[in-house]
Amino acid sequence: MFKFSESTKRKLGNAIVYIAYHTSGLCRNKLLKLLYLMEEHMALKYHVPFIGMPYEVWQAGPVAKDVFIDLSDVPYILKGFVRTEFRDGGIFIEAIADFDDSEFSKCEIEIMDYVLVRYGNMTASDLFLETCKKDSLWYRAA
Image 1 (cartoon, rainbow, N blue to C red):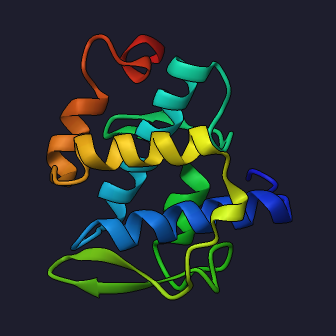
Image 2 (image 1 turned 90 degrees about the vertical axis):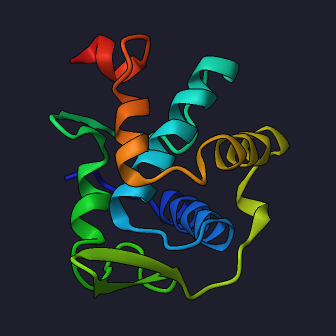
C-alpha cells in the first residue's frame, strides 16, 4: 500500500473535488481514468508528476490501486473530500468539500482544465479506450 503523506492526501482530495465539480455523473472508473490522464499529461508536458501516485497495469487500463480500494466503500483516505454512492450498478463520487486551489501550481490547474475539457464528457468506457491507445504510456508499460 502506498503511504500517503498529509500533503498528498490534500492534493489528491482536492483534485478529486475539482473533477467532481466539473464532471456530472462521476463514477469511480471515470475518475480513475481522469486522474491517470492528468498524471500522464503532466509528465508529458512538464516532466514532473501531477500527484505522483503509483499506477498499476491492469487489464482495465492504468489504475491507482489505493484510490480504487478507498473509493470501493466508504472513503478513508479521502474522507472529508468525497463520498461514494452505490447506484445503477456502479460507484459514484460526490464532492463534500470546497475546492482549495492552494494545493496546486498554475501549470497543474492548467493540466486539470485541459484534461477535463478534452476528456471530461467521455464515458468511463471511452476513457478506457483512450488510456489504452498504442501511443499511451500505459500501452508502452503493458
